[in-house]
Length: 562
Image (cartoon, rainbow, N blue to C red; front, top):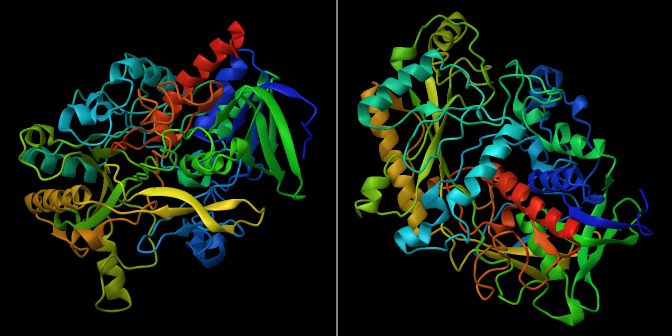
């Protein structure tokens, strides 16, 4: 491990995922000398097994208890369970906390879905009286979305739909064309008033400098060695390193922010995970981008002058307001898609289309029994066959082969991704007894869904049923009661909100730039600052906010204010 104990940096960035990668990029571009500390291992995306086939891997590449998304998933050392790094759940709660533990974090394997939050999402409380408003408006963040989408490369289209904002002229890459089954589904959606439109994903459809356009041949979750699918390890981090002003230390588990006598952050303490030694690093400003849970843990475990509530927690809000995405899914079989000619329609290894929430007007009129929206992610077509026979259970030999081939491509999957409202029963805190293998106290999670989210599940089920009926299909998955159908907290890996931003130091942890109210030179730049959890996947918003925060920090560094 590189020893940086004798150096002083302009900025320390803790974490290397979306927020950390963007922070390091912006600050180094502005001339700052930056130290990036990553708890996990180093990672070279050029070694990604992009084109390996499942039968080249153990268990045909299937998921296991320690490789939830399969043998080839990019987060080699990560998962909901990390050896030696436990977390706990309070009695009556269940929560799944994903840690990637590698350079680039979750950006190496995320779905790349990149939906902007809209005006309603930033001011939800003003609209329906629930949750908390953000201290910023969509109009303030819109230019940062444009700049972020241009920088990382996002395909999609401007639809003009309510609360699904358009990008600026020339910002988006062209989306991949709709395939036959998607056009079939769109026709049904048009007939019943459910919009089926091109999805937005952080995947290139045209070359951008050293990054190549996608050639539609590999699952994005394996990592992308050609840089087509955005991840910080093929873009922001190499760009920051190219300035000569970024030092990266992996295997550095940060456990405490250190303050000087004036109450300003002067650096961090971390553990060399290889040797177990404690080390310290110094800087003029500290940016925490460790992830929603890890940033909260770090603050709660940092106790200046023995203060039991932790650091930057005069509001008592650190760890509170934990939110995740609402998830459920259904599959349906469509006879109209049976027996069609089989051809290569691989396309993007992710969404071509999706159904953005369409029922805002009825919601505003009080005709729905839930206050916030969801979208539907949609999959189907001639995907690589799995181990099953597509619902065919009768027969054997040539008969079952013929039936499976006839039904191949006739199933469509509908996945709900919805907004959760913060509630008093969902938060994280330090477990009073348990520690990880490094001796750091671990998080204990409390989590509960509310009727708002459960009622949303029913609306999704009814909408899918309407669409499937219109197209002459049959829902093939069990339609469960909402409490059974809904995902486990943390399962969607979209947790946010434990250090929310706001405009009142009494009810929030940071201001609108991610600067903690209590420590002027301590910033947060990850999902922890979210004031609400829109149904839109959070990464593009984390990136945009981190770019804005990074430039704010850079201006203060350049002026000598920090």
